[in-house]
Image 1 (cartoon, one colour):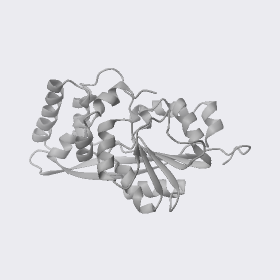
Image 2 (tube, helix red, strand yellow; image 1 turned 180 degrees about the vertical axis):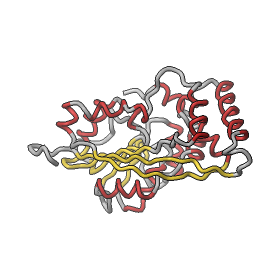
Image 3 (cartoon, one colour; image 1 turned 90 degrees about the vertical axis):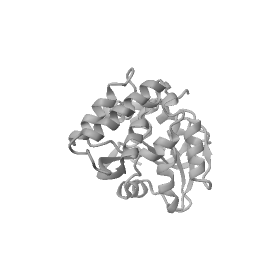
Length: 265
């Protein structure tokens, strides 16, 4: 299964800006994943769509047997540099490099919306053991804050086509069909507001790490980054501030593979 074109081009050389601009997941959100998926010492866990390994490294302390899977080479290299003790494999959600029933839990950080949802769920059902857990997590910015909404609107003017986004909710459709109901228990969820304190360079790097910005031609990419920096320099809420508090919310979802002959586990 090919990686979505916008993701393939937008993240092809984005390892550095992704690492600089994207926040870590809040500890409470990661703890929710760990608790609900039963992640602990000796548990076989895959971080799927691992990117630069931000979520993977937050799970190292659990003692789980971690494997990162990332289809984009630049991201995979960044992940391997950050986590030399963790295997980092190429692969996609629709064609995972694991044998049937080999994995206890899969976590997906800010990536499931890029997958072919039904195909990914079939493949996840294959590699998970009966009762194995699937956890999804995203951290969208809080656009209720005026300057954040203006920044998002500015960047969105450069969006080409209709790339999938977590906030459009299309990713949920895969979990709403009869096949998913046969494969997995219903999604449960929890939400955790948090702040990411950054300097101005990191705030601009957050814009640069956006998939469709990374996919722009170089001149257009520099134009949007320049406009984002100008907004931060002139907006009354951000002008003259050496650091900014970016408001986020971590959204956590989890479910379990149904066991054969048992529709409730």
